[in-house]
Amino acid sequence: MSVIFKQALGFAAGVCLAGAAMADTYKIDTQGAHAFIQFKISHLGYSWLLGRFNQFDGTIQYDEAKPEASSVEVEINTSSVDSNHAERDKHLRSDDFLAVDKFPKATFKSAKVMLKDDGKAEIIGTLTLRGVSKEIVIDAERIGGGADPWGGYRQGFMGTTHFALKDFGIPMDLGPASQNVEMFLSLEGIKQ
Amino acid sequence: MIKNSVIAYGVVSRALHWMSALTVFFLFGLGLYMVDLSYYDAWYKSAPDLHRSIGLCLFLITLVRMAWRRISPPPAPIGRHDWELKIAHVVHLLLIGLLLLTLLAGYLISTADGRGISVFGLFELPALLPAEKGREEWSGTLHQVGAWSLIGLVVLHVLAALKHHWIDRDETLRRMLGLKLKTSDEAESDADR
Image (cartoon, rainbow over all chains, first blue to last red; front, top):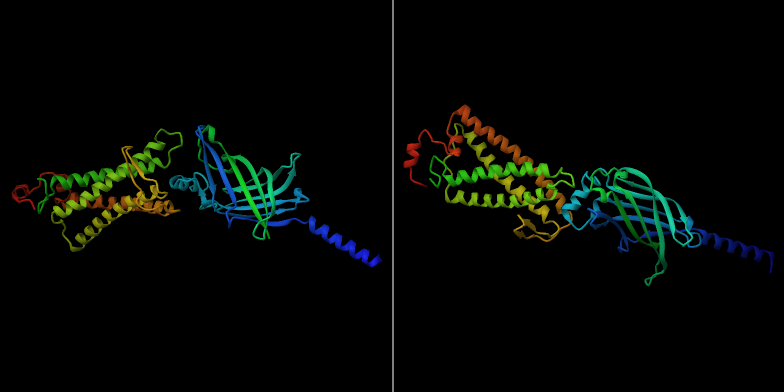
């Protein structure tokens, strides 16, 4: 094998490795609604109230070989809050809760992904909600990924987190059992 | 005197007028009060329920009022100037218009997701229009602006009535209160219209 050929092979291998090591960009599939941002909060301590945000956008940078280098960014349209009750949703949009007139967007931007032994991960990042930016931790898990039947390539993740309403300046007091809200995220991304 | 005469209000018109007035004030106060209640307040759920139920009653009173106006037209308006009569007429039209607008907007808020309205827990007033995303927002604004405009106009209406009573010293307020008119003998003898 000639030296030049060896060098060329080495270069090609290097490019391939570099390419493999680079994270792919996945656009969160809100268009096809294979992505959900839901919340859950106790009602009086007696039952769960479930709701969701219908409009959001985001991207996930994911590298199968190096998942700890992944990152995620999501922007939520707060006025799209939907708890399946018009009067309650109107209240949720008001100053008592999300104040969507003043704060039409909520965002999450990851800073760090920490892999755990069980294959799951902790995503540490900043949630900006109602004008307050605070660090939160999302317990995340990759559910699966690969080619889809229509010529695309997808990755799917889920995550859960929780925080106190008070931490983000939400003034309404829903009682002792309802100080915290839990979030459930199911995000499928399509490779760009 | 049940019906209105040329110069005096009958008992039906007076009752409808004052029932509306009381209900409007009550609903306005209740509306302001209920939106600021804390979650664990005993009235947090019952105040809005009552507000919606009484709202339907006011709507029915208003329909009866409009029908009764046809059956028994009100006495001739009292006023010294043409412009005064015209303004009074416009204010009366706006009062009834804003009242209906506010009532209907309230109904549209509560039925925006297709749910009906429980009336005093006795029966359900159904949602007549299909559910529509976001209707609670614009109809909410309409309800709020309508209610405040109505109250503003009511203040004007009251001031005008007091002006008639104290300054013009005419029968405008007395005849709506059902007090004995200076010309009551004529009024009694006047055949019901």
